Length: 379
Ligand code: LLP
Image (cartoon, rainbow, N blue to C red; front, side):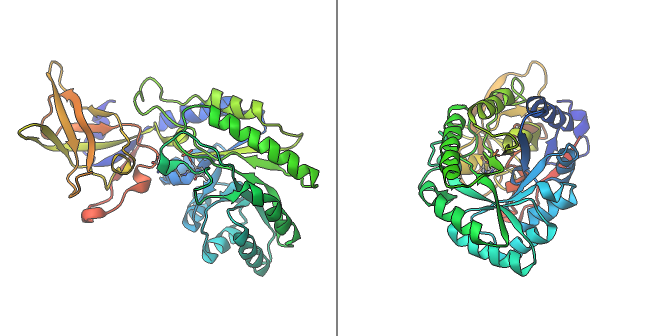
């Protein structure tokens, strides 16, 4: 990283590498062009408007989880027909926002929600396309806080209740059943769970067809992970393996589409949180590197025990290596980015990068301790 581009930018801030984002999108398109795969970007991972415009310009769809995300997606150029709205608890106002924009699909997460959406769509004089979100009971082998497809999670409709849900959608005059929606978890780094998901989808498809239900699409959700340990060696996820797994295991009919909604895999590696060292505090047993970013800027280490690679961007040649606990200034013991990190000897004012922070970094920032939100530099 050439740190001259950071001259005069107030830390802490998120830096997004536009060129890497573009290359990531190129890599996706190289795998999906000419296939029935339609990629939607999960806005929750990072709603920075400049990034959204780059993604919408390429014709991607958007996966939204709130009325505000829908408004932002439309504002940033996503085609409303390619905006899908998911969530276990959509308020009436949010549903009406989606209906008025004429979005492409509502992903329904419960039998109860069918009546609510049906009534609101009829009130608005609209016919809403829906996908039923199925809970496929698959272990995604990821962190327990970000696994979503297990029976005990709050998401989706149990496999055993899907036929009842299908019948309910079919009798509504204001709803049109477009497909099924799945999502098994996030930061999934092996392809096996995606293969198992495809099997479940195939079984369900066969079962529903026997009852006379034809579907136009299957949405496999998001979840493809990134390499947090080696962002320079693997700046772009293995899209080939991911898309091949889905396209070769899913049994699609002529004209049927498969949708996915990737968040982290699209924006994760293009972002870093950049902070300045406030001071190095020599403790009796530890050296603490105290930086001006904290868990309010990047909560993933405190919340999930996640580790973002730490680099001293101002490191001078020939500096000895030292061991530091890298911590933020916030009044919480969990405000720690890394323990026993080996880094070149650090001084007050050095610039520190927390890598692979493009997804669920700025998006989850808060103003805890009345701190300012982190800044943004897109270049
Ligand atoms: N679709 C649905 C229905 C989802 O719930 C999610 C993420 C995605 C797509 C996008 O998943 P991705 O491709 O980004 O894995 N804050 C956590 C991650 C939470 C993911 C929530 N759902 C983290 O920082 O690891």
